[in-house]
Length: 196
Image (cartoon, rainbow, N blue to C red; front, side, top):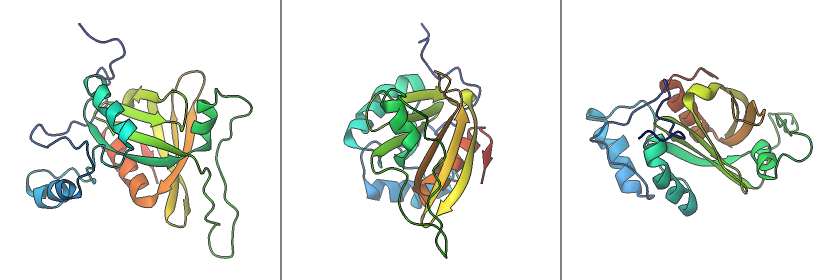
């Protein structure tokens, strides 16, 4: 029987080859072997990290979501005032895009949030977890676009447009540039329009 909550009905997806080991624990030797030595047989065009860069609690959630969303392709920490707002029950005005103060060269390095949220990309969808409250899980079909909006020092800001339910149509976030480049690459390979 099909799970009505399953993301596997998504017309957009990115499947991990069957022979590629699923990464759940943070094992840097395994990641090096897969992404460097294994390139001859596995060349995804992105850094495959699985759930290695997620918190222990989130790694457990990733395992529990496998049947519904597929294998985890990558994930990490994200600073997001929008996700904090969602976690607080959407009380008050939605924060929206964060603009750090401009300096003579670039921007101040103050992040948009000091509370860590997390993101994970699965074969069939996207998972966003606020620092508290319920996480969002949507299939790639419901993600309209992912756009890089700002570079702030070693970080990049992104805007994810989509149908997140409860009339939420966009979520802004910030993380290190490598992680955000990886997020943009993976969702792009899954068929989601990306803009950098």
